[in-house]
Image (cartoon, rainbow, N blue to C red):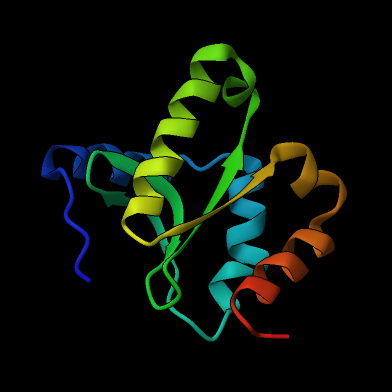
Length: 117
């Protein structure tokens, strides 16, 4: 399947790639970048920009900061995850704290979802 995207978000996604959070940088440079599959950073899918997308496995990896725990953030995430699910995409969510405190466990979980264990 070829996911469609909102081309107006492309410039914003490029800015986000340049300005990744410390946790996004950690998971990218110390793990995702070295996987034997292609991982896209700040990928536009329809009207969303996802943190990381592995098209071959139809998996999105999201690193959630504090804004995701406010009511508006929770609602938006639920709607977004539902829409991505309709496209056959699995969303894996990890918190900044997960990256900071249990990085190896997060990496293992992603590998498990990719059948790389």
